Length: 293
Image (cartoon, rainbow, N blue to C red; front, side):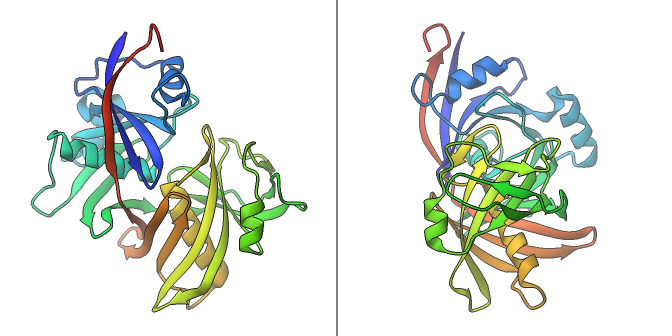
């Protein structure tokens, strides 16, 4: 089998996008792993199948909620495991759809994308694109986190942004740099579905002109350490605001190894939403032959 693909990236979080408008391509976990392999494949943190929502059962359910959610982001981690969604992936996917002429923003400047975590709305932003990740909640308690490079386990904060996260505060920039994320951090207790784990330190000053400033690194379940994680960035900002307490800002600037992302929190009729902004780009196009890859 030979497939055409497009390599995309959003602050270094990179994805292999397969255009499959009619839902005719069946990608097995071994195909995902081959495509994602950085030595023998294309290389990426995950694979996105661009498919019209009407060709998927979950997509059809979402169309009943919002008929404008024409496109579904069928996202899979690099190890072949299915993921609920990916914040950077939504922006990269939206950029792909727009640049390739598959869709356009509506009259209100919105683009609705279907995901396993519901419909995500994307708009233009000075940083590139902004995606409304929807409502969030504290979930998963405060598990202890063991990671290479940290002598003593640290408590984390569990959050749900449509996918699970545990955020850990570190004492210094040096401690963040000394982290060795070659292996997955151990969580105690272990979450039923696993979790992405973020490690964060404040910048100096932490708040400037009403904007919070932090730096973080992340280990993504099913992938490993990545240069960026969109939902992880949002979870990090939410966790630091939670720890800071009353008076903490609702706008944050988060530095990751792959660049800088923006986060803001807005109250809606259905609760507080968290929005993520940042760049996205197409890197190159190609074809992959699974018989020789």
